[in-house]
Length: 174
Image 1 (tube, one colour):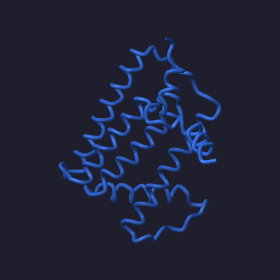
Image 2: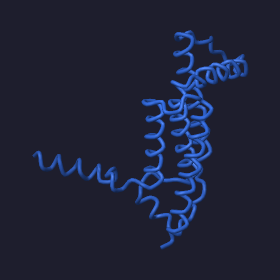
Image 3: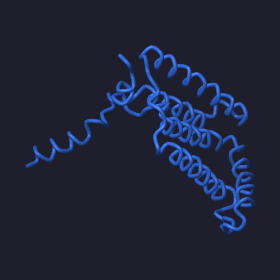
Image 4: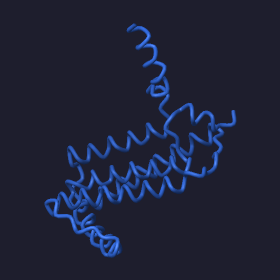
């Protein structure tokens, strides 16, 4: 009985094997490790310099991914019907998450009244709160990590990155 359960679990999880993790996904982990080092040890105290480091790191990781794609003869599969709603949801959800986190950290959870009548005012106000919170060098790496997740999810939605090695290999013309 336990063997059949174990076999079923192994079958379901074979695609989640760390050996099947794409280079893009591994690079995202590298980015997050650097963000956690920034958070834990604070080798850079200035939030602007933290953002510069994150931008330089993202550019280097994109370059590494691009070189890997060129060497592997990768071919972009194109957008699917769900790509645009997916990336839109990703951006909106990330913004809402960062806004709620910012209000919780700076305003003690005193969120503004949410009304569809004044959505523009709400976005403008919440953007200010996000910037205020993210400019604190203690919180900046967390925001940069969140933006890294949103960036990776956006690249996956646009099919410019993959999460699984097998998916990447299927896109290559070898």
